[in-house]
Structure formats: structure tokens, C-alpha cells
Image: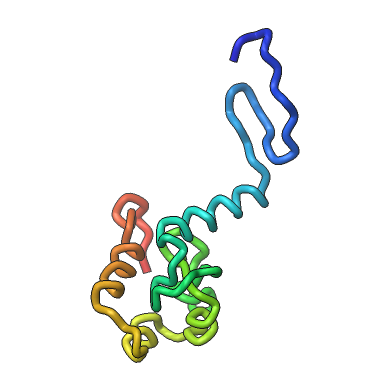
Length: 119
């Protein structure tokens, strides 16, 4: 940025040098939106429009709030799955699909080797 340029104040962004910092609420919104967009706003389980994110491995069973453990989900599937193991629950559903199950597995294991995290 040129010395004579001035930044317009933004209540959601802060600047240090040329680094843009965003507030927690904006970061959370972007994080959620990125996951919903990756799944094209469709439920990863049944394919209906998604409005929520599901912790594939439930938080009550040690699942973390990380990109690898969250998938887009319709409210109905999210509620019905609850804290049940996702594979066990999904395979019992009339809308179970082997290709979608594979897509979920790939999503869950993205960047596992790069970050060293696993479960």
C-alpha cells in the first residue's frame, strides 16, 4: 500500500502492517461457509440442501471441531445421526450410497499425513 493511501475502517477487519486480521465471528462464518461450499451446500449423507455441519466423529466421543471432522449436513440427518458412529448409522439409511460414503472417507482423511492428526 502506498504511503499516501489510507485504509477505510472496517469493524470486522483489523490491519497490522499489510496483514488483515478478522474477528472471531467472521472467521467462524468463513470456516462454516467453506465447508458448506465444498459440499455444494448439500447434505453429505442424503444429498438434500444442507444448513448445518455434522461432527462426523461426535464431540462427545472425542471428535474435534476441525475441517476434517465436519461435513455439510441437513438438519434431519444431523439430528437422527446424533452421536452414533457415522458408518454404522449411514449404512442403515435407505439413501446410503457407496460413492458418497467414499467421498466422506476421502474428506475425513484429507491432510491427515500433512498434519499428523488422526483418530
